[in-house]
Structures are given as C-alpha cells and as structure tokens.
Length: 627
Image 1 (tube, rainbow, N blue to C red):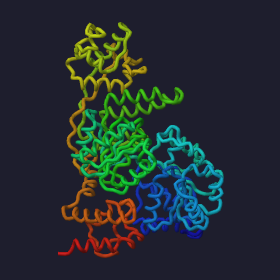
Image 2 (cartoon, rainbow, N blue to C red):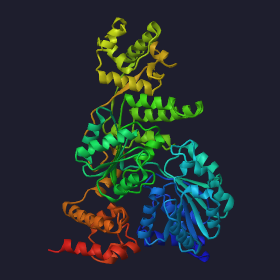
Image 3 (cartoon, one colour):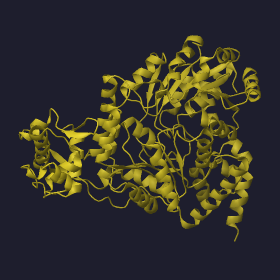
Image 4 (cartoon, rainbow, N blue to C red):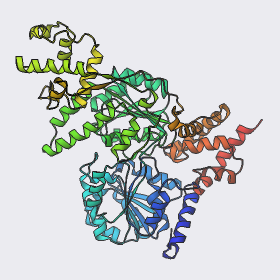
C-alpha cells in the first residue's frame, strides 16, 4: 500500500492518521496507539502490553498498511483466522491466511498473492515457521512488519504456553531489518521479561498501557447452588445478552449448558473433548448470533473479537490472576458496561490444591502454580477494592474504582481469631490424640455438636471441642475454613485432601496473631448501566451511562439497525460485528445521518463500509424518519 518514499517520519505520521480515518473510520488514536504505530513505522521493535479491547490490532495493522510490503501476523488462533481476515476484508484491506485448514490449491493461490505483493496482511500459525518451505516463502516477498500476537504464549511463566512460540526468534535471526511488534493483553513483570528474552526483543521499546477496564464491573459471590445463582444473574441483569460462562471441567460445561437451555436461555458447550467440527460450529454460532451464551472450559476464548460480550461468568475458581484477567477481558470490548461475575467457595480451594498436588512437573513448577493460586485467592478474599488489587498484580497503582462489589457493597470485617482457634484446635486434637485427619465437613459437624453417624463412629463427640462452635452457622464456618486456607493458616493434604495445620497456625493458636475475616454482605442488584456510585468513579460512570442508555425512540432505531445488520451478515456468512459494531449502530441511531457525508462522520464507518452499506443504512433511516 506504500512505497519507500512515502514512509519518511513526518509523512508516515500523516499517513497513519489518514489510514485510521479512511480505512477504520476513527477520528483519533486511543491511549498510546499513535506512539506505538509511529515507532513501528519508523522501523523500531516493540513489546506492547495493552488490555483486551484496547486496540492492539491497529498497532500492527496500520504499520502494515503504511510501510512498503506485506505485514505478517503470527497468531495461534487457527480457528479464528478466517473471521479475522473477513473482518479486515470488510474494511477493504487485502488480507489472507495460511494454515492447516486449507486445501493445497487454496494455499497455492494465497502464496502467489503474497509473492506478487497483492496482500497487505498475511496471517500464519506459529508452527508453520518450523518448515523450510514457509521460511523460503517469506524470503520471496517484501515484508513490512512481523506482528507476534498473543505473545504471552512464549512464556512458561504465563497461563497459555505454546511450544511453537519458542521458535519465533528465527524472525530476528533471518530478517533482522524487519521491525517486530509482540503484543499481549496480560503479562506480569516475570512474563514480559521472558517474552523479551525468548523472542530476542531485549532491545525493543516497551509500551505498557493501563490494564484497567473501567467499563467491566468485577464481582465475586459466595458459591451456593451455583447453577441457580448463575440463572438468577442472567435473568435479572443480562437477559438476552451474549456472554461466556467458564467451568473447570468438560462435564460441568455440558451440564451447565443443558441446564441453561432447559431454562430457556440459548447456550452451547465448548471444550477440547468435542470433535473439531462441533467446536468450530459452536464458535461460529457464538460469533455470528446475538444473545448466545457459550459455556466453556478455558479452551475457548483467546482471540475472540466479539465486541458485545456483556458478561463473563466463572462457576469455578480460575487458576491464576493472569488467567482470570485474560478471561474477564473478553467482556465489554466495545467499551460499554459489562460484568465479570465469579461464584467461589471452599470446594474450589480444595479442588485447585488437589490439581496442583497432582500436576506434572517438578517441585518448582508446583510452587509456581501454588503462588498463582495464592494470588487468585487473595483477590477473591480481599476486603479492599478488587480492581485496585487486580491492577496491583500487574504493577499498576490506582484508587478505589467504585465499580466492583467491594466498593459498591463493602464487606463487614470481623474478628475471627477465636473461631479460627476453635477450628485449628479441633484439627490438632484429631491429629495428635487420634492420629486422624478429616475434611471440612467432619470438622464443622464436630464444632456444631452434630452427633452424625460418622461423628459417632469415630467417637468425635467425646472431643473437648465438640459443640463449641454453635455461635456460627455452617455457612459461616465454611467461610472461616475457606479464608484460613486462602491465608495459609490451614492446608489441605494427602490423597483425600484432609485439613491440616501449617507452620503459621501456631501463632493463631497461641493468640499471637489476630485473624480478621470478611463477612460477605448481600450484593444489591447492579444497575445495567454500570454507573459508578462513588466520587472516585463518578465521571467515568456518567460517561458509561450516556454511552449505554438510549431514548425510547433511539432504542427503537438501534434495534432496527441491529436487525438489518443481522440479516446482512447472514447473507455474507459473516459475524454481525464485522458489518458494524454496536457502538457504531448506537451512534447512528442517535445522530440519524441523512447523507453519506454525515454517515461518514460516525466512528467506525470507514470508506469501504460506507461504500458497501451506506445507502442501505440511509434507506432504513429514511423510512424511520418518515411521518
């Protein structure tokens, strides 16, 4: 798209702004996009950390369009490449891909287009770079930029390690003069250092945008009949919305999807145990249909560009904060209010500890997994602002957000030292006096003075701690166990995951350590607008409210535009959002442009889409405006 003479620094900046408006339909860059794009256009390498929905793709797409040659994008998302390419083609960009899903004839055509310079962007799976044929193909054409998407996949510290990414240092070795840009939405300091080392990006400029997603409301609730809790959450806060529900196991995804379907909510399962055709069909439906709920394991989601996902729910505790952030980041990519909802309980802690104990790898690996889990538990049990703690994990400091559950409904903190001593004392007596260990259920029955068959069988009603815990209800005792586990004051051990004291338990038993616990308060129904309720978040909340709410008349126009978009997308077998995103349709519904020139001023309406869909949109609006 560009010639060498067109890429001098001043002119490159002008061309970048022109491409942003003409091709993508946006008036201005966001956050650090302009700085990143200018650096890459000038030939610099970059490591970019930017939250999901922050506009990472523009950071390599625009340099590929401005610099001479073809941009090569390395992406692990084979199942999504076709959708990504179709979305670019809708913008008038000459894009294509090469991966194992294509027949030899199709691959030959794409290779010839690449060699002849007819492509602006070519997507490749990382494993293709292991073949000499692909390396020779890349030698045969002018390459403008290498983009390494989902760069955290190179890091064994991260949450989605892919061995093929370790081979990508060949890009620097074989094409040292081609700028490289590595991008990811999640990376701690350890992860980003490993990315730089493994991809030979030590000299690259680091760009770190804020990890904050102010439109996403973070909420963690005590788990109590989670399927029913999920159903209430969907019916009261997100009826008819598209969303993702994450479960830990394949069986649970099937059960939850069936449950939601029985309750009249359109839901599909997705996990690695389904055959490839079924997974592809379910993914395609989720991308193309409005209001569908995908119930999935973590096998689903990376690279999903669907902008109108209104919620991400977790029915099981994520293994790490990085994974949690990555997964919740799939909600609200359009910037409109969205919810990250997690149901979490004692069984989650026990289950995750069991998975760590039984995992492959050496002691250092298991310790790393335990460290990740400890951070996730700390986030789940915090009495402070969740967003503040979440961002602190990525070394970002911020004030209380006013848009998470602990800000909207601060939990009560109470002195749990005596209950902790009672529980730990019971475990000590079981272990020392009787050489026995049991799970939480048996210990709580002893504390509550329940002479169950099992309590009687082992003579536990004779323990001095039998019945000393009747001041708390069973649910409260389970909360005590959960929080002691989260703080390392209690452990689960052995094949049967029984309770045991830790090295730090002695401080509590001796009275040398105060144990303050959280008491979860009932969460008030969250307004669908996502308005923030504190002074700290008032300005951002008002902006979100204005973006989300439409007048009755505008809402009716928006629904007509959405119906038109759906029909148009189905005719072309495209995801609806690749025609126009919801934010663009909302802006059109409010502005009611009467001419192509006025429509071109709407954010998200570039030249290609204006030419393709402009008249149809104006015809629809003319019918709406007729008396």
